[in-house]
Length: 278
Length: 66
Image (cartoon, rainbow over all chains, first blue to last red; front, side, top):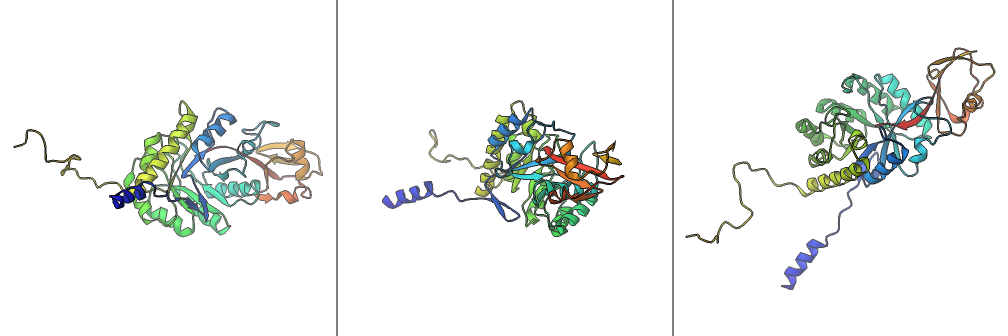
């Protein structure tokens, strides 16, 4: 009896194993990465990011006369680099050359910061990645000392090429940027996850909390999103929902789901001892 | 001298350093990065780097984005 009780207690109080996301040798407690665009104002930006629990936040690099008034606080005043890992991106770049220039400016702006998000777009209608230019830019950036997290198509062969180049994280789209269409091709994501030796993060396409949970249940190491939070009716509340969804999906993946058994249903209750049985 | 700053053609009087250009735009001490003709001008060289006619300058800042 005592022994049985001890076993129960042991199970109940088993310590939660620390489960950090390691990118380029640095450990992060949160597996949710968030963008900083499309918010109503900086106060809402900060509140949503705090609610998300994200430690890594993406920023865009733009000319000084765009998106900032002299004398007004800047984004990096609201999100200080000593509190967050700032991940400069190349959103809006359509060539390898523009992407490389943008990230060299970002490195200068952030005083030598090497962790970056590369995205080279192929089409302004779909924002689908231009993979030849992405591969070219990744190669230049890795050789120049950057730690490159790369937005890419959900193509396992090109994902492997990016890993071979030396990218520190592979970030396939789940559906188009800003579409909120969710995880449209879990099979391709699974192929990428199964072969990758660096973290795989879904970047783009998440629309609501269940999408983030599905990505994590597939075995993704993290999820990066912006519009799903910023374009929600209540962005701060959605940020909190996404935090829980990413955590729940990760826990479910670690727990190992039951096998699917379409034609051999087994009841959860005992099959014997039913009243009225002969 | 003729300069193109963030895509805008401007006529400014020489001599003009990168630091003076930033100062004229109230950007001294702000988190900005400067590129001149496709090459980064490190912050440590803003004061000594003089602009010449035809230079193409980009001055950038971090803004909200995904």
